[in-house]
Each structure stands twice: as C-alpha cells, then as structure tokens.
Length: 436
Image: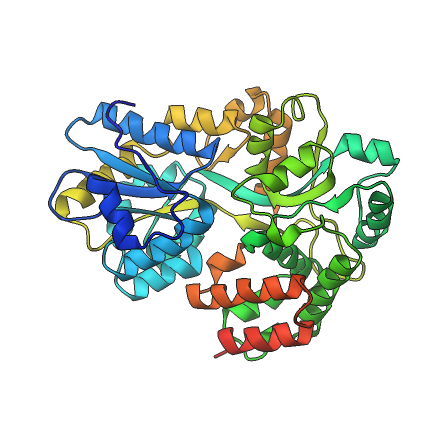
C-alpha cells in the first residue's frame, strides 16, 4: 500500500467540493502532471477490491501513478456532479453510465473512447457485450465497463421463515399475505434503508416491470407525454403504498441509511425476514454477518410475479456493470495514464478473483471455472443466470434518467413511501420532469 495516495472523504458529505479538493492535496484534479486522480465508492468488501486494483497498477507502473479518493455512495453522487460541473473532476470518473453519462457527454465533460476501443479491441472483447449498452451514447463509447454485474435480488432469512412456519413468496399476493404473519411475531417483513432513497426505488422498478412490462418505463425514458400516468404505473405505485400501509417495512425505515449497512444487519440478525437489494449485498452479509452466509441461512430469489401482470418473470433490474470515464479537462499525461489503467489495471486476474471471493460475478468473459470453484458457487451461478437469461435487464432508474429527472424521482419516491403524495400526484410530478 506504500505507493497508494488514498484519501477517505466518505464522511465529508457537508464539505464543499472546493474544500474537499483542497483537503485531498495531490488527489485533487489538475493538469500539471503528478499522476491521474480517481474517485470511487468506499465500503467493504468492494472498496478493498477497487483499492487493490489501483495498488497493483501503481506497483507495476512506477512512472504512471493513480491517486485515489473514496466516498460514501450518497455523498459521492452529489460531489462528483458538482466537481464535474465546476471543471474540477478527477481524471477517472467512477459511475453507473446511462442518463448521467449522457448528460456529461452532451456537456463535453468526458472523453470519447470509441477510437481507443477500436485500437484496443482485445480490451473490449474480454468484457460482457451487454455491459457496453450503458457506456454508449448515440453510438459512441464514453466509458470503460468495469467490476461486476449487479441484478437486484430478493434476499431472505431462512431461519426466520422456519421460525414463523412460512414459505418464500411465489407471487405478490404471497408477499402481502406474509406481512401480517411476520408482524405478529415481532419481525419486520422487509428491511429497508429508506433514507438513501434509491433503495425504495428498487421496489418500483420491479413492480412497474412485473405489472406493465418494460415498455412502461421505456416510454418514460423516451419522454413520452404523461408516461408516468399509464394505468399500470398507477397500479404499481398503489401497490407499494399498500405495502407501506400494511407495515411491510421495518419501523423507522425512513431514517435508516444503506451506507451504514444497517439494513443488511436487520436481515442477518433476524430482525427482518426479507430485503430487496443489489447482488453486492451478498458480499456484505458474508463479511459482516458472522456465519449467516456460511451456515446456509441466507436465501435468495428473483422478485415474484404480480397476478395478471404483463412482465416476464425472468426480467431483472439493477446495474449491468459499473463504468469509468475520463474527464475531458484532464491533461494529456493524465489521460494517457487513465487509458493505460483501463487496459492494464482494470479486471486483471487478481481483481477478478477478489470479486468472485466476495460473492460477485465480474463482467469479464471466461470466468465460468472460477465461479464454479468458488465457495459462493451457488449464489454466483444464480446471479450469472439472472444476468444472462433475463430477456430485459433494466438499468437502475436514477442512472437511466438524467440527473435532474433522477433527483425529482428520488425526492418523490420518499414522499410516496411516506404516504405524503398519492400515486396520481407522484405521476403528475414526474410527468412534469420527464415528459417532452
């Protein structure tokens, strides 16, 4: 770790970007050499893998150093947008692609990598082809897909189900029938880090798909007028409020943050029966939950169908990959280092092994034998099958939409879950933000 210039800013959510950059010293952006800068998310076990990739690259390339700074998820989303808008972005920008990337592209804030990928076809050929969709804007590639495929999964505590004497839900009606059974035993039916907002969003993503199919949200992405008011959308919004009113979520969910992993702890300690979360949750529970995972107490399944719904039960939502872009404001030396890091530092063998050890499926092709040999082989195969067999893999809404529309979405989702807006009011507010 001697070569790493790693700075932790995860707790500095209230610090202005200019102050944060000053605090970073040479980890801040600039054009005067001194290596490339790189901001990404902290939190274990993912942070350790990201940091390890940087350290390995720095060790092997003494003349090309990458200086990294880490942030908590929610703080990062604010800071990176502010820094990019102020022309103070790091050289390497970690993100989720999609609508946010498009915004950067349209403002000329990130490099076009299309010709670089043409010249380095071996880099592109080693990655999941599906990972390039959210990296592409108007037929041009603006980001390097990296890390892992992360569908959203319904996790459950097998011991809690056995204690209450019930089976995992096979339909939405089953979900609603389980709620009073768990509440009667003093167990929250679902854990939820509702203060983080995007955790609530996952419920709507699945309900929209299961009830109306992917076409409902596709109409929203395309800016179709009054798309949020589609009857299937109103049904989905209504159903999530019915779950809230039935006390389906842990008491006080609006004050629980996902960054703290408090929502994860509710599941593995048995205080909650189920939790809808990204595939990365498996690694967190494996690291923090004692023998919860190794004892076989963790169950997982796809989101159940809704009776009469149009959606295909194989459809999933989440993150088809994570993405690295290069700031157009970076100097030539920094851009060269960043591209060398993409070619020689991203998803190398050791990083791939670490992702697999953490219960994740890396987006590099040809890892089937490593997945099968892992102690988490069953979960990894489950994740791989979801990602590879889904007829539709919908990108997380807050990334598929523009940052402005996403912020309106997240704010209104909070109000929806707090029952302070009706489904119809929610739809009107979002129509105004996304309709052409």
